[in-house]
Length: 80
Image 1: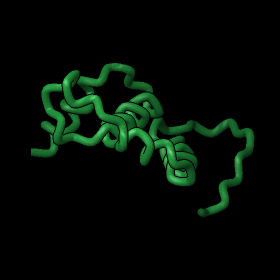
Image 2: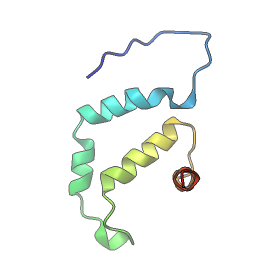
Image 3: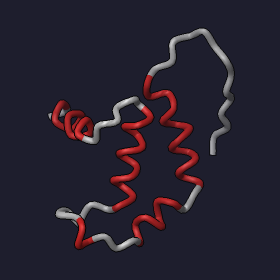
């Protein structure tokens, strides 16, 4: 894992700046693996999408200041 230096600054911080830190923390934990082992199939319409992928997407959206999960779909459509 890459070492991160955190310091106070007066510089403008971009919304995606925290993604690397949060991604490194989640990568070190087994939280995503445990989520993928959970069976929630009866509660979801698209059970082929892993629970960990949904969590990582939602966490990334939260890190960028977009609390609505629909923003993930908007980002996907803008690349087409």
